[in-house]
Image 1 (tube, rainbow, N blue to C red):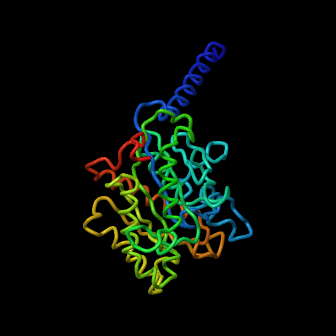
Image 2: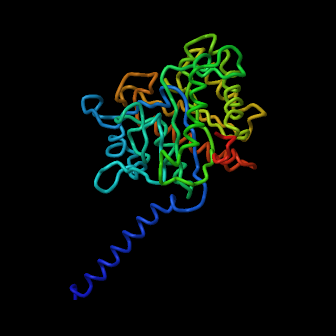
Image 3: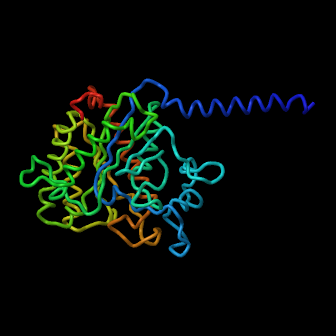
Length: 332
């Protein structure tokens, strides 16, 4: 009897495989526009969350491997690996990070053994949209809004990294079909921008005092230069050192970030994401670098996840398109 059933089983398996491949590829074969999110900031947007477990450092705690294999919450992160234990590379969520490209997977942080907020963010928005998603990540360590990211409306010399952020955003949007050939000819929609930055302003008294004004100007200026007047903007709190932080400048900067999202002109289009509860002590982490969230992968994932959920909340409130198609010459 099994000899008669075997061919049918093979047909079922083959059909299932074909269906799975077709479903995975469907995001890139429909006519719906590609959803693009810009992720920008300084070193904590770059990301220092460690992927590989170091058994000599707290038994590997705080690494992504530990998170999916050993942590109490490992079931939540199981989808990051396939049945053979390999990291899943998504074909429905692509990422461009200063020239590094591919399907979203661990390794798009500061190096191939690190993650930033992009993994959690991309997982959330990728799961939410049937359309293909592209993350454009533009971030460098050690940059302040008071100087390197200084926007035109703040007066003085415009920051070099601010100008690069604008130019690289426009260039990447205009050339997605070349960067990702499977997207050639598709309409491109800039959907939102995620921001995780603040340390270099936090440690500078003058920059700290001006942070609320500078960040507000940054949002206004980026929206103007990207021809996206209603572009949803998510601010992840500079919450390293956690709930017990008491330094006046740290508290001041976090309050400024929250205040920007609460400005009447930004209500419904700018969101603030609290992050202090994502802090993990060095005894639970791969490093003692507090300014890099102790290199804790769970922390970086949760920051990105929080940003992604906040972004979806803003998009649910949107009443007008965030931006025109990138095929419009004005976007370029």
